[in-house]
Length: 610
Ligand code: G6P
Image 1: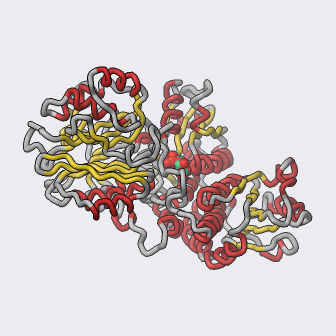
Image 2: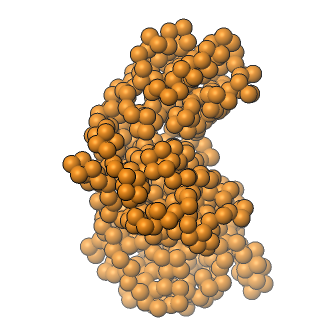
Image 3: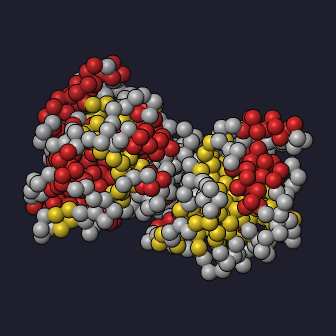
């Protein structure tokens, strides 16, 4: 959950590390710190709170060096105080470590080390690794780490620097990965590491994703890697074609707004090159499911968390509708803790923007153990979910920095649409031109929905003081209602609930009065009239009604207080535009309430602890 970054090379290390941390702040942000070695001395600066506090500290007490590590923390063990901030230093002051993850047997090791005279000055499990490594350190840091990790249970990505190295020129960072993400960057005469490629792409696009159990030594001139057994290994270099500009705010006030406005392009990038409009075929580069295999499937299971889970609910709708294969959707965090039924007849897809959400990865592994074939639907090449899968359907959203997911969600919907069409095709059914043609208009339709921003900004003035919101949708728009409610909760801290419109009369109707804004999505033909009558029930109880629709607003006269009209698309694609006003509404209300929309309290972009 924390962000880690490291650098060894000719440049001044501290500004480079701080820049890396800025790009990782979304991973966690309750404290931050940096450690460097200069003139054979280990030095650290740490601060509680956001990164700016650390920057202030560094201004008062500057640090300089040419290699070092830095960390932004999301507390697991120990309160978010300066004392518990990383880097953590061993009690002999020789080794500094940054760590993302949890050491499950830290208490047993701590007891042993205490008995051997090691002292502890933090409440973190990380300090156990620092002292353990130090206890084995005789000048070869990688060798000490290799010995220490044999005793650790749990999940971790760590980077360590030390003084007194007797290997090479002594300038080195040692990194180890077990379960949590870690990526190395290759430069010209310099090397980088980070928990996320977003921190690296301003400097290099050539990256190496470590495997579980790998230990790496980074020096200016090379990166050496050993696997769990201690054997030297070569890991493939991945070239990321993310544009460094994409990780900057690009003139927008917040990453979230920038990412909302990137959706036309992100959608285009996700279907581009995968659809042959002339021949009516769909294909992917990193995913292939043979026709016989698809025919043999008894069902598909979709596993995900958060916004990705909402995308999966829409995925179910699309796959069942277009390919007629039964689909089950599970919260990944629930799936693993029952005895799920999965075997070789089940295709399991893990849906994860980051590909690193631990609940999703573990649930996927539980399915794999039972004999199911795994695929991933992810935005991050080389991420854990993609590595344990037999194939990946990538969304091409580019890096998503805002903690609340926006463009990742809509690109997941595009990807699901393609997957449903692909399965249909592999089953020998025709992918009719009318199924493919609307994709070409999709980016334009999203742009038109984005043009509602000024209208939504006005609405936010009216409703930002509400204490509760209800979101209603039916059919394919029900998950959109869930997503609208989640966005508002995350960004503005207003309590919001998403509900199937037809279920409202079985409970939430009791909440309705003149203070409750109700946001409904009423599009298309299938359930429009049904949703309209649900809204009449709201109006009859004086609720305030905001409707997102692709129909003529006149049809909602007397039912809606405000109508947000989005372009009409076939039902299967309509959630991609109907969610846009809900993202903007959450954003505008959040901003108006003074909330930190890019980094909402208590949330993290990528939840890599259970
Ligand atoms: C966190 C984020 C959400 C995200 C969820 C799943 O909770 O705050 O925005 O939807 O994780 O993330 P994933 O990377 O697996 O899609």
